Length: 252
Image (cartoon, rainbow, N blue to C red):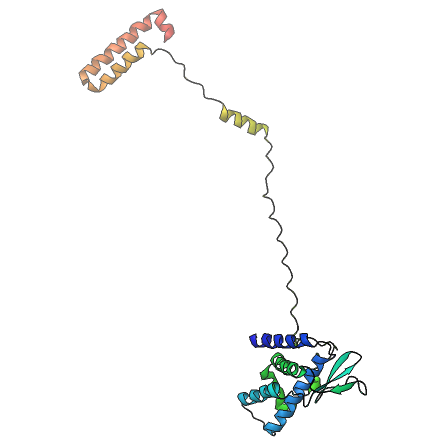
């Protein structure tokens, strides 16, 4: 990837010096694969199996040394320049005048050659050469869609569509609240019963007779049987005497 960017910068630098070419990107692509195909055919002599390192050495040598001003030149017509040479289509046949040696188009061709090979891929280029023929017209269809000089090879891979922006998530629904339950007369009565304060016991001075009776009752477990018998007889006599009295009879 870094190598591709370096090649692109070299091409941009050369283009900035001389950018009035027409069809230069198309012509550079055609010239590159034409020269690569011709050189492979000459050096490999029909060999069907070629080591990858040897194949790549030949391709690199083509891009670095075979774009000279002895084979390629420039035609000028109406203020525009057009490349001519092996593998290049004549876009203005019979027009303009050509010359060689002016400008740095040879360096631009070398940079574009390396860039197109990098863009296509060296492994893919070797697979295409398995048929012993590289069709430069087919390999440069996209580059020849426009007459613009350009700064580099057009991408052969389809661009990925932009990612859709994530939709904001809807706010959470508010918590459900139950409506207050209507109170029935029965509920109101129960509520009033529960909340009604309990009646407090009346406060007052303790009954002295109640205290004496408690003392007597607490002594019962300590009495002997004969004493209990005497106590019982006394209680019966007391009840008998009270029964004979009209006042006591009414209380009983």
